[in-house]
Image 1 (cartoon, chains in turn purple, blue):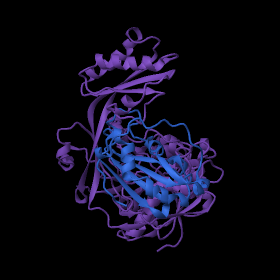
Image 2 (tube, one colour):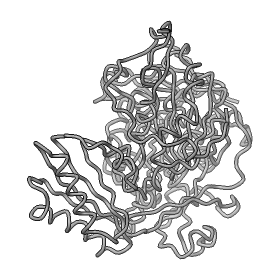
Image 3 (cartoon, one colour):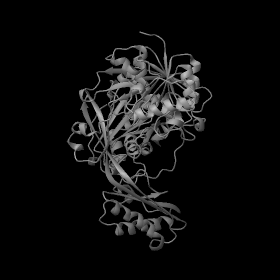
Image 4 (cartoon, one colour):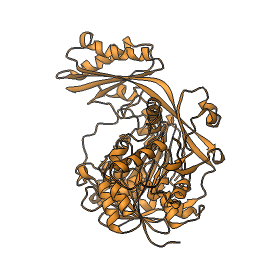
Length: 449
Length: 140
């Protein structure tokens, strides 16, 4: 087994993240001289559904819309320095993304990179509908994707891929795949897989481990939030990692930022489930080795789950929202009166959520228990926001019209009406046996046209 | 008997919210190891369930990570259906860590040196409900 250290940098934590993060990460990876991989994590729970909808209107689309912006600044440097790229930015069309990357390399005057796509996650076809369970029958399914693990990524890298384009894979698998390929671990080496999984977990939200989504003035001050350094994990042959970030970038990595991210979206710390392993961080320890260097130890692993998790997104009707502002004396009372008017006008359409932005609009519940319990106050700058959902577009549109009508029929001084109507997507999850989800990689030369 | 002061939890701990589906998890991480036992003793499943009573959690479970001086609360069915279903502007429940961090904490004066920041004028919780409205179980 190799005893060197693999450096894995992460330059995106979701679709919509900053697109200029990769440059300093790639520079740091290249300067280290260590074997290195760059990952981009761009798929949240509903991103794939949006990508499927995009592909419906453009068969060549359906991959990360900012793919060019993410790769163009760093593709030449990665190829020159031997930094491999692994990402789920293929979304609903990994082959389409791979072809776009090949074209981008041509546009940039680069040699042709070896690009592999990972396939098998998309279960939205009619032939696989029976896998989705009874809960999904009869639904207008937009997307259905299994969370794939690290093995197909590792296989693609071992076969010589310089860029691996995935659709839905578990976020930490973007890190586990390269480590598995590099160190040649056994695929049931649960402790090492679990350690690499938690390294990937720390990386997968980008700057959330390096000072992003952490700052709170006067208490949790972070320097340079406008130019945050994205994280790099230095993974050793046992899977242990040290988290750091490029020099001369903003942000901070310390035991507090790392602990917040370590527990992010974790439920039982003794059983963090991924397709690769069940990771156990109940005895994990973090140690500050120096400025912006934190070591994670004590992660253990157990045998991976027998099934794969599948996320199904389906159409569920319409979301209607409307807003109007009140200011000055008795502004809050006028906004509350507007709520009463809307409830009467829209009676029978289903629950109407009302928020008084500036008074109570975030902690509350859709049923309004929180807002109803707030004592009436004298806020002088209040924005009323209402929302409802309905299966039928025409019914949902009634909210938009009623909010607009407050201009002439509502309380005095209301202004700044904005309304929006958008389709809603519901999600449900199910488990599918691994044997029903054949997973493979193939190089772009072989990809279907 | 001025051996204790009452402060908001955010002076002793920080945290972050995560969401999956209709389930929220909120970490509570001690600012200093000396404050950790206070969190374990006072920030219990019952106290957190009460703070979130208006969202009617189906279950509140607390997991302890002593090596990290951190605890992880898992609140089931508090997101009005979750990111795709809720009518809330913050359908992820991203802000909920700050609701938890508004809880009161009794701190011995001798440990006050480890507190951070200052108390603000947070309003009293508007909607305290009897504890019996939620189910809890211990997992510590």
